[in-house]
Length: 281
Image (tube, rainbow, N blue to C red):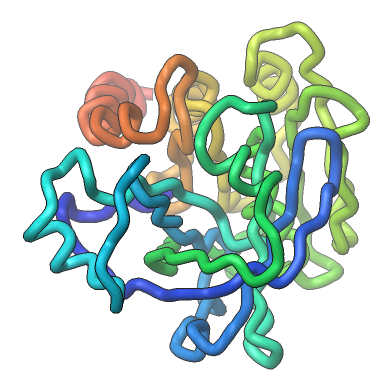
């Protein structure tokens, strides 16, 4: 997801849980609504995201909720914890915001919350951010990602005209995790099974026979396979940086706090390693 300046405080929205739905064994949908979304808009990018604010354990914040005041008056350990999620759908008429959560049992913070969420519960979040939308001027589109990138890939595919040429690859744990996407583009579902995350995805994109013309690519998910696909696209296929939306949404062995703290340095290191190869290719 798009980088943001450290410490920048954006507008905080307040919403209520409207309903929840279990989409697959490992994906829970939560729909938010309420008058607090009157000033919210997510209609320019297909990878719009929000940063949910979860209270630090055992901490109560004064009302009205003021993030600036909290960061000024509370110790850092008592600040709300943020978790980033892609906007799966935004209905401005009914003011409903749809978010999909990947569930790993009791592991993590946001997933267990999504399983317990009940109608009427208040949720606060910042956003939206976002930086990608399919370029109508491209000759074809490539979209590749894991479960974390599925909402953004689905939104992008559903936004494309029916005659668009696109190749879409989504890696999930198994066939039970496939989702219906309202698009004329055929999605290639890759079932991970016991293989490492991203291995099947890298193989599939590497084996793809690229169509002629300019490609606009969206590649997001676990940082390890994102690095491999970035090398493939940027160095081997020499796709210009401006035609790539590519980033690690998460990294094995790191929670979001740890990954976000190291992501900028990791990204700079990867670019330093690969850009020389791209220039020489």
